[in-house]
Image (tube, rainbow, N blue to C red; front, side, top):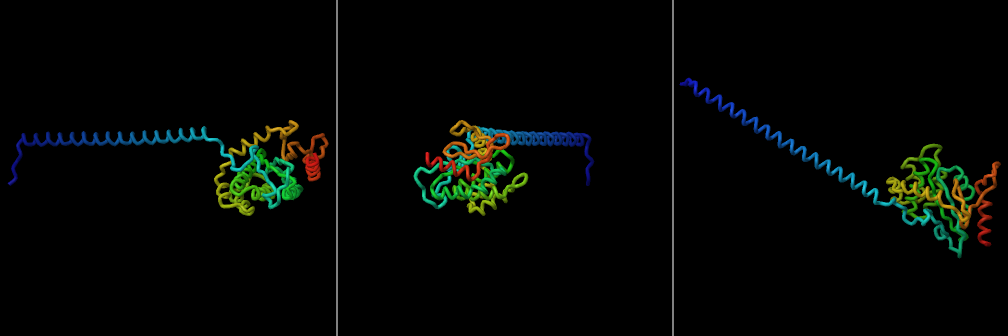
Length: 267
């Protein structure tokens, strides 16, 4: 039999219900506070970690010198000798220095007309050639120079030389080549996988800029500074081609370079 509750019992039940509701609200509020504190703590940790990472990156960037290709000369060039081309070194070879930009059309012409003759002179032991790439014309200049330094560092002067010829032969009409095209040309020149991986990573882009500035600031033995490419030094002195209509010396050809080499040998 169901008993009818008294007024006091009903009031007691209402009070207990109200108390239970308040307890639930306090518990819910406490959980929300704990969750908020946890989220804030996580966010602060993430922010602190990101700040530390950024600071470390900045510090490392400031402290780390620009990466220079291993084996490069003190003046930032690639020295090609008789032994690199399978020849026999002679005593006191004449030192030839060639400043070139892989995007330079006149450098391409110089390579086509005089490059093979110089290779023959190197193989015979008559000269050593220091190739001093610079990059000041366009995007291809920087990309090609950086890629060529990867090939040199990993595979030496001979493969660098073969790669340089292909870079000149494949000068784009505008813009640059893709990473794949640079890698394909490197493989065609005989470069290793380490070299092609390096080309993808592009570690020498900053170095090309620094080296170009240094090259244009370095005078020859007579105090003349680099004004364009190609520029050829024989034993440190600039070799000039025939003068143009305005009296400005032109790009030297095979005849002028060989004459300067013979003069250096005799002197």
